[in-house]
Image (cartoon, rainbow, N blue to C red; front, side, top):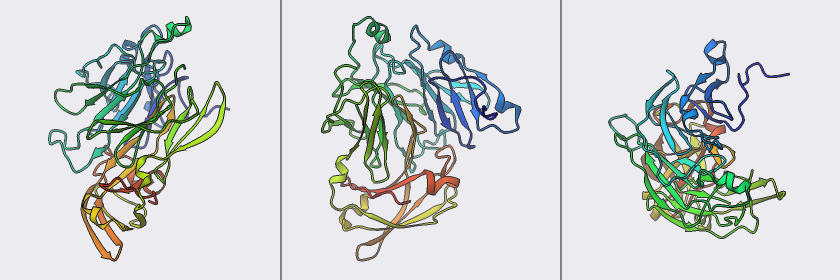
Amino acid sequence: MEDQNGLVVPRWYASNHILPDGKIIVVGGRAQFSYEFILKSTSKSDFKVYELPFLKDTTDDVENNLYPFLHLSTDGNLFIFANNRSILFGYINNRVVRDDYPVMPGEVSRNYPSTGSSVLLPLKLGLINSSIGAPDAEVFICGGSAPNSFTTASNGRFLSATKTYGRLMITVEQPKWEMEEMPIERVMGDMILLPTGSAGWYLAREPALNPVLYQPYSRKFEVMKPSKIARMYHSTAILITDGRNYNFIELFPTELSVEVFSPPYLSSRARPQIIWAEPETGLSYGQSFSIGFDSTENGELESAYVTMVAPSFNTHSFSMNQRMMVLEINQIYQVFGTSYVIDCFAPATPYLHHQVIIFFLWYIMGFLAGGNGFISVNTI
Protein backbone atom coordinates (compact mmCIF):
# COMPACT_ATOMS: atom_id res chain seq x y z
CA MET A 1 0.00 0.00 0.00
CA GLU A 2 1.48 3.34 -1.07
CA ASP A 3 1.77 6.28 1.28
CA GLN A 4 -0.85 8.84 0.27
CA ASN A 5 1.42 11.57 1.60
CA GLY A 6 4.37 10.44 -0.49
CA LEU A 7 5.73 11.75 -3.78
CA VAL A 8 3.34 12.70 -6.57
CA VAL A 9 5.67 11.39 -9.30
CA PRO A 10 8.49 8.80 -9.22
CA ARG A 11 11.89 10.39 -8.54
CA TRP A 12 15.09 8.41 -9.04
CA TYR A 13 18.33 10.27 -8.25
CA ALA A 14 16.54 13.28 -6.74
CA SER A 15 17.85 15.60 -4.01
CA ASN A 16 16.02 16.97 -1.00
CA HIS A 17 16.42 19.69 1.62
CA ILE A 18 14.58 20.57 4.83
CA LEU A 19 13.03 24.05 4.61
CA PRO A 20 12.51 26.66 7.35
CA ASP A 21 8.83 25.71 7.77
CA GLY A 22 9.72 22.06 8.38
CA LYS A 23 8.65 20.78 4.97
CA ILE A 24 11.07 19.06 2.61
CA ILE A 25 11.60 20.10 -0.98
CA VAL A 26 12.42 17.25 -3.38
CA VAL A 27 14.11 18.35 -6.60
CA GLY A 28 14.68 16.52 -9.88
CA GLY A 29 15.20 12.86 -10.65
CA ARG A 30 15.58 11.03 -13.94
CA ALA A 31 13.41 12.75 -16.57
CA GLN A 32 11.70 14.75 -13.81
CA PHE A 33 12.42 18.42 -14.46
CA SER A 34 10.36 19.52 -11.50
CA TYR A 35 10.08 19.65 -7.72
CA GLU A 36 7.48 19.01 -5.03
CA PHE A 37 7.08 19.13 -1.27
CA ILE A 38 6.70 16.65 1.54
CA LEU A 39 5.37 16.29 4.24
CA LYS A 40 1.91 16.69 2.74
CA SER A 41 -0.80 18.71 4.47
CA THR A 42 -4.40 19.29 3.42
CA SER A 43 -3.29 22.09 1.09
CA LYS A 44 -3.71 21.30 -2.61
CA SER A 45 -0.38 23.01 -3.27
CA ASP A 46 1.37 20.19 -1.41
CA PHE A 47 0.10 17.66 -3.94
CA LYS A 48 1.27 19.64 -6.94
CA VAL A 49 4.33 19.14 -9.14
CA TYR A 50 6.13 22.39 -10.00
CA GLU A 51 8.08 22.62 -13.23
CA LEU A 52 11.73 23.71 -13.01
CA PRO A 53 13.07 24.43 -16.54
CA PHE A 54 16.59 24.89 -15.15
CA LEU A 55 16.85 21.11 -14.77
CA LYS A 56 16.01 20.53 -18.42
CA ASP A 57 18.45 23.25 -19.48
CA THR A 58 21.32 21.56 -17.62
CA THR A 59 20.70 18.05 -18.97
CA ASP A 60 23.09 16.63 -21.56
CA ASP A 61 23.33 13.25 -23.31
CA VAL A 62 24.06 11.33 -20.09
CA GLU A 63 22.18 13.78 -17.86
CA ASN A 64 25.05 14.88 -15.57
CA ASN A 65 22.60 16.86 -13.43
CA LEU A 66 21.18 14.13 -11.21
CA TYR A 67 21.35 14.59 -7.45
CA PRO A 68 21.56 18.37 -7.94
CA PHE A 69 23.34 20.17 -5.12
CA LEU A 70 20.88 22.03 -2.86
CA HIS A 71 21.89 24.57 -0.22
CA LEU A 72 19.56 26.84 1.75
CA SER A 73 20.98 30.34 1.47
CA THR A 74 21.03 32.64 4.48
CA ASP A 75 18.43 34.87 2.78
CA GLY A 76 15.93 31.99 2.76
CA ASN A 77 16.16 31.11 -0.94
CA LEU A 78 17.45 27.79 -2.28
CA PHE A 79 20.73 27.57 -4.18
CA ILE A 80 20.53 24.85 -6.85
CA PHE A 81 23.60 23.62 -8.75
CA ALA A 82 23.28 21.15 -11.64
CA ASN A 83 25.98 19.97 -14.05
CA ASN A 84 28.09 23.16 -14.11
CA ARG A 85 25.47 25.88 -13.64
CA SER A 86 23.48 27.31 -10.75
CA ILE A 87 20.53 29.48 -9.77
CA LEU A 88 19.05 30.96 -6.62
CA PHE A 89 15.46 29.79 -6.40
CA GLY A 90 12.47 31.18 -4.53
CA TYR A 91 10.54 28.00 -3.80
CA ILE A 92 7.67 29.86 -2.08
CA ASN A 93 6.72 31.80 -5.22
CA ASN A 94 8.12 29.30 -7.74
CA ARG A 95 10.49 31.77 -9.37
CA VAL A 96 14.18 32.12 -10.12
CA VAL A 97 15.58 34.87 -7.90
CA ARG A 98 19.06 34.92 -9.46
CA ASP A 99 20.41 33.45 -12.66
CA ASP A 100 23.56 35.55 -12.92
CA TYR A 101 25.88 33.03 -11.30
CA PRO A 102 28.72 32.27 -13.75
CA VAL A 103 29.19 28.81 -15.22
CA MET A 104 31.69 26.86 -13.11
CA PRO A 105 34.96 26.88 -15.10
CA GLY A 106 36.89 23.85 -16.27
CA GLU A 107 34.53 22.11 -18.74
CA VAL A 108 33.74 19.56 -16.05
CA SER A 109 30.39 18.10 -15.00
CA ARG A 110 29.99 18.03 -11.23
CA ASN A 111 26.80 16.01 -10.72
CA TYR A 112 25.85 12.36 -11.14
CA PRO A 113 26.97 10.33 -13.04
CA SER A 114 30.09 12.52 -13.25
CA THR A 115 29.76 12.90 -9.47
CA GLY A 116 31.59 15.61 -7.65
CA SER A 117 30.39 16.77 -4.26
CA SER A 118 29.41 19.99 -2.51
CA VAL A 119 29.01 21.61 0.90
CA LEU A 120 27.90 24.96 2.20
CA LEU A 121 30.92 26.21 4.13
CA PRO A 122 30.38 26.91 7.85
CA LEU A 123 28.29 30.01 8.55
CA LYS A 124 29.90 32.52 10.92
CA LEU A 125 26.84 33.94 12.63
CA GLY A 126 28.60 36.97 14.10
CA LEU A 127 29.54 38.35 10.65
CA ILE A 128 26.53 39.99 8.99
CA ASN A 129 26.21 41.12 5.37
CA SER A 130 24.11 44.29 5.79
CA SER A 131 22.53 43.99 2.34
CA ILE A 132 20.80 40.73 3.27
CA GLY A 133 20.80 41.10 7.07
CA ALA A 134 22.47 37.72 7.49
CA PRO A 135 25.90 36.07 7.17
CA ASP A 136 27.27 35.49 3.69
CA ALA A 137 26.92 31.98 2.30
CA GLU A 138 29.75 30.31 0.36
CA VAL A 139 29.38 27.08 -1.62
CA PHE A 140 32.32 24.70 -2.04
CA ILE A 141 32.29 22.16 -4.93
CA CYS A 142 35.02 19.57 -5.52
CA GLY A 143 35.71 16.89 -8.08
CA GLY A 144 33.75 15.55 -11.02
CA SER A 145 34.79 14.49 -14.49
CA ALA A 146 34.50 15.32 -18.17
CA PRO A 147 30.90 15.43 -19.45
CA ASN A 148 31.53 12.42 -21.71
CA SER A 149 33.38 10.31 -19.12
CA PHE A 150 30.41 7.99 -18.54
CA THR A 151 30.08 7.28 -22.27
CA THR A 152 33.79 6.73 -22.84
CA ALA A 153 34.00 4.41 -19.82
CA SER A 154 31.19 2.32 -21.30
CA ASN A 155 33.39 1.96 -24.39
CA GLY A 156 36.42 0.88 -22.35
CA ARG A 157 38.27 4.20 -22.23
CA PHE A 158 38.61 5.70 -18.76
CA LEU A 159 39.15 9.42 -18.34
CA SER A 160 40.79 10.85 -15.25
CA ALA A 161 38.67 12.63 -12.69
CA THR A 162 39.34 16.31 -12.17
CA LYS A 163 41.60 17.84 -9.52
CA THR A 164 39.76 21.14 -9.60
CA TYR A 165 37.52 22.67 -6.97
CA GLY A 166 35.68 25.95 -6.75
CA ARG A 167 34.27 28.33 -4.16
CA LEU A 168 31.37 30.66 -4.88
CA MET A 169 30.03 33.34 -2.55
CA ILE A 170 26.34 33.12 -3.44
CA THR A 171 25.12 36.16 -1.46
CA VAL A 172 27.32 38.92 -2.92
CA GLU A 173 26.32 41.28 -5.73
CA GLN A 174 28.94 40.07 -8.21
CA PRO A 175 29.60 36.37 -7.54
CA LYS A 176 32.71 34.84 -9.07
CA TRP A 177 34.12 31.32 -8.94
CA GLU A 178 37.49 30.99 -7.23
CA MET A 179 39.10 27.93 -8.76
CA GLU A 180 42.07 25.93 -7.47
CA GLU A 181 43.36 22.34 -7.52
CA MET A 182 43.23 19.52 -5.00
CA PRO A 183 46.22 17.26 -4.30
CA ILE A 184 44.40 14.25 -5.79
CA GLU A 185 41.88 13.70 -8.59
CA ARG A 186 38.43 13.04 -7.10
CA VAL A 187 35.17 11.54 -8.25
CA MET A 188 32.45 10.03 -6.02
CA GLY A 189 34.00 11.62 -2.93
CA ASP A 190 32.01 12.35 0.25
CA MET A 191 32.50 15.80 1.76
CA ILE A 192 31.97 16.05 5.52
CA LEU A 193 31.96 19.28 7.53
CA LEU A 194 34.06 18.75 10.64
CA PRO A 195 33.35 20.45 13.99
CA THR A 196 36.44 22.65 13.64
CA GLY A 197 35.05 24.18 10.44
CA SER A 198 37.22 22.12 8.10
CA ALA A 199 35.98 19.86 5.33
CA GLY A 200 37.20 16.34 4.70
CA TRP A 201 36.38 13.89 1.92
CA TYR A 202 36.95 10.31 1.11
CA LEU A 203 37.45 7.52 -1.09
CA ALA A 204 36.62 2.80 -10.57
CA ARG A 205 39.86 2.61 -11.34
CA GLU A 206 42.87 4.02 -9.52
CA PRO A 207 40.93 4.59 -6.28
CA ALA A 208 41.74 7.61 -4.13
CA LEU A 209 42.50 5.94 -0.79
CA ASN A 210 43.65 9.04 1.09
CA PRO A 211 41.20 11.22 2.97
CA VAL A 212 42.03 14.88 2.44
CA LEU A 213 41.54 17.64 5.01
CA TYR A 214 40.76 21.13 3.71
CA GLN A 215 41.08 24.28 5.81
CA PRO A 216 38.64 26.85 4.36
CA TYR A 217 40.32 29.83 6.02
CA SER A 218 43.89 29.08 4.91
CA ARG A 219 42.72 27.29 1.73
CA LYS A 220 45.26 24.54 2.35
CA PHE A 221 44.95 20.79 1.87
CA GLU A 222 46.46 18.06 3.98
CA VAL A 223 46.58 14.47 2.71
CA MET A 224 45.75 12.02 5.50
CA LYS A 225 46.79 8.41 6.06
CA PRO A 226 45.23 6.14 3.42
CA SER A 227 42.65 3.45 3.89
CA LYS A 228 43.56 -0.08 2.81
CA ILE A 229 40.12 -0.58 1.28
CA ALA A 230 38.90 1.06 -1.91
CA ARG A 231 35.39 2.27 -1.09
CA MET A 232 33.67 3.11 -4.31
CA TYR A 233 30.13 3.32 -5.71
CA HIS A 234 27.48 3.55 -2.96
CA SER A 235 30.05 4.03 -0.21
CA THR A 236 29.28 6.82 2.20
CA ALA A 237 30.78 8.73 5.12
CA ILE A 238 29.20 10.51 8.08
CA LEU A 239 30.28 12.55 11.08
CA ILE A 240 29.60 10.87 14.43
CA THR A 241 29.17 12.48 17.83
CA ASP A 242 32.76 12.12 19.06
CA GLY A 243 34.16 13.95 16.03
CA ARG A 244 35.24 10.87 14.07
CA ASN A 245 33.97 9.84 10.63
CA TYR A 246 32.31 6.55 9.74
CA ASN A 247 33.05 5.27 6.24
CA PHE A 248 31.04 2.25 5.13
CA ILE A 249 29.10 0.24 2.53
CA GLU A 250 29.83 -0.20 -1.12
CA LEU A 251 28.69 -2.37 -3.99
CA PHE A 252 31.04 -4.16 -6.38
CA PRO A 253 33.36 -5.54 -5.11
CA THR A 254 31.17 -6.14 -2.08
CA GLU A 255 32.78 -4.90 1.15
CA LEU A 256 30.84 -5.26 4.39
CA SER A 257 33.33 -3.67 6.78
CA VAL A 258 33.04 -0.29 8.50
CA GLU A 259 36.03 2.00 9.01
CA VAL A 260 36.37 4.86 11.46
CA PHE A 261 38.62 7.76 10.49
CA SER A 262 40.01 9.98 13.26
CA PRO A 263 40.89 13.51 12.08
CA PRO A 264 44.05 15.14 13.50
CA TYR A 265 42.15 17.13 16.13
CA LEU A 266 41.45 13.89 18.00
CA SER A 267 45.17 13.54 18.80
CA SER A 268 44.86 16.33 21.38
CA ARG A 269 45.03 15.01 24.94
CA ALA A 270 43.24 18.07 26.28
CA ARG A 271 39.75 17.67 24.86
CA PRO A 272 37.17 19.71 26.78
CA GLN A 273 34.27 17.82 28.31
CA ILE A 274 30.81 19.34 28.05
CA ILE A 275 29.04 18.91 31.41
CA TRP A 276 25.73 20.67 30.90
CA ALA A 277 23.75 22.96 28.59
CA GLU A 278 21.01 25.37 29.64
CA PRO A 279 18.31 25.32 28.41
CA GLU A 280 18.34 21.67 27.38
CA THR A 281 15.15 21.92 25.31
CA GLY A 282 12.91 24.55 23.76
CA LEU A 283 15.69 26.76 22.43
CA SER A 284 14.31 29.71 20.44
CA TYR A 285 15.83 31.67 17.58
CA GLY A 286 18.31 34.25 18.81
CA GLN A 287 18.07 33.02 22.40
CA SER A 288 21.10 33.11 24.66
CA PHE A 289 22.16 29.78 26.12
CA SER A 290 25.05 28.51 28.19
CA ILE A 291 27.36 25.50 28.08
CA GLY A 292 29.30 24.33 31.12
CA PHE A 293 32.52 22.44 30.43
CA ASP A 294 35.77 21.24 31.96
CA SER A 295 39.08 22.03 30.30
CA THR A 296 42.74 21.97 31.29
CA GLU A 297 43.62 24.24 28.34
CA ASN A 298 42.86 27.55 30.01
CA GLY A 299 45.39 29.33 27.82
CA GLU A 300 43.35 28.52 24.71
CA LEU A 301 39.95 29.66 25.96
CA GLU A 302 40.11 33.06 24.28
CA SER A 303 39.95 31.30 20.92
CA ALA A 304 37.25 28.80 21.90
CA TYR A 305 34.08 28.66 19.82
CA VAL A 306 30.87 26.64 19.58
CA THR A 307 29.62 24.96 16.43
CA MET A 308 26.24 23.44 15.62
CA VAL A 309 26.18 20.67 13.03
CA ALA A 310 23.04 19.37 11.34
CA PRO A 311 23.46 15.66 10.53
CA SER A 312 22.78 14.96 6.87
CA PHE A 313 21.20 12.36 4.64
CA ASN A 314 23.93 10.97 2.41
CA THR A 315 23.79 9.09 -0.86
CA HIS A 316 25.87 9.06 -4.03
CA SER A 317 28.55 11.38 -2.61
CA PHE A 318 26.21 14.20 -1.61
CA SER A 319 25.29 14.90 2.02
CA MET A 320 21.90 16.56 1.76
CA ASN A 321 20.88 19.12 4.39
CA GLN A 322 24.42 19.24 5.79
CA ARG A 323 24.95 22.52 7.60
CA MET A 324 27.31 23.98 10.19
CA MET A 325 27.17 27.22 12.12
CA VAL A 326 29.85 28.92 14.19
CA LEU A 327 27.78 30.57 16.91
CA GLU A 328 28.15 34.13 18.16
CA ILE A 329 29.82 34.16 21.59
CA ASN A 330 28.77 36.50 24.38
CA GLN A 331 31.36 35.60 27.02
CA ILE A 332 33.57 32.83 28.40
CA TYR A 333 34.38 32.75 32.10
CA GLN A 334 35.96 30.50 34.71
CA VAL A 335 33.76 29.18 37.52
CA PHE A 336 36.52 27.48 39.51
CA GLY A 337 39.53 25.27 38.79
CA THR A 338 39.03 23.64 35.39
CA SER A 339 35.30 24.46 35.20
CA TYR A 340 34.17 27.08 32.68
CA VAL A 341 30.99 28.46 31.15
CA ILE A 342 30.55 29.77 27.62
CA ASP A 343 27.51 31.93 26.80
CA CYS A 344 26.44 32.08 23.17
CA PHE A 345 23.43 32.78 20.96
CA ALA A 346 21.27 30.43 18.93
CA PRO A 347 20.84 31.26 15.21
CA ALA A 348 18.61 34.31 14.82
CA THR A 349 16.25 33.05 12.09
CA PRO A 350 15.05 29.75 10.57
CA TYR A 351 16.86 30.76 7.37
CA LEU A 352 20.13 30.28 9.23
CA HIS A 353 19.03 27.05 10.83
CA HIS A 354 15.53 25.67 10.66
CA GLN A 355 15.86 22.87 13.22
CA VAL A 356 16.91 24.78 16.32
CA ILE A 357 13.61 25.36 18.14
CA ILE A 358 12.07 21.91 17.94
CA PHE A 359 14.96 19.56 17.35
CA PHE A 360 17.84 20.99 19.38
CA LEU A 361 18.54 17.89 21.46
CA TRP A 362 17.85 15.21 18.89
CA TYR A 363 18.91 16.57 15.54
CA ILE A 364 21.70 19.05 16.24
CA MET A 365 25.20 18.04 17.23
CA GLY A 366 26.88 20.71 19.33
CA PHE A 367 30.67 20.88 19.71
CA LEU A 368 33.05 23.06 21.67
CA ALA A 369 36.27 23.76 19.77
CA GLY A 370 39.40 25.83 20.23
CA GLY A 371 42.35 27.45 18.53
CA ASN A 372 44.70 24.51 19.12
CA GLY A 373 42.39 22.19 17.20
CA PHE A 374 40.75 20.50 20.18
CA ILE A 375 37.06 19.60 20.12
CA SER A 376 34.68 18.16 22.67
CA VAL A 377 32.58 15.05 22.32
CA ASN A 378 29.05 16.08 21.34
CA THR A 379 26.76 15.84 24.35
CA ILE A 380 24.15 18.49 23.51
